Image (cartoon, rainbow, N blue to C red; front, top):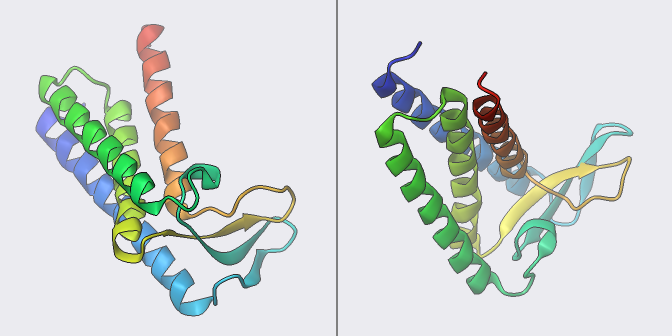
Length: 159
């Protein structure tokens, strides 16, 4: 079992890694792929398509960049405050802590995009289904939420 203090350090490092890898991949996309252009990555599965989004997930709120940025900042800060208070009690599962760290690190990557560019850089597009273009932060947020849900399920079933 990892000591509570070490768990927090691990969670912080996970959040930092998620933030860094998201910023790195978006920087690569902006530098190497002109806006609205595509390149195959894994044929028949996924391609790189550089687009930007001023809205939230699935382009909700498109054209309202300031409002979306304000709401995203508020949600990020509330989640951060909740996580810090929860982690101080030491009464949460390590899996939950890692899940929330992933969400926070990835969400911060999208938030930084909003503050620097006024929009989020997206570059991953499925070829086999019609689905909005997304970025690594979006994937990581989904993974983090999944880990939190698994931790909650395990806690509710006593595992």
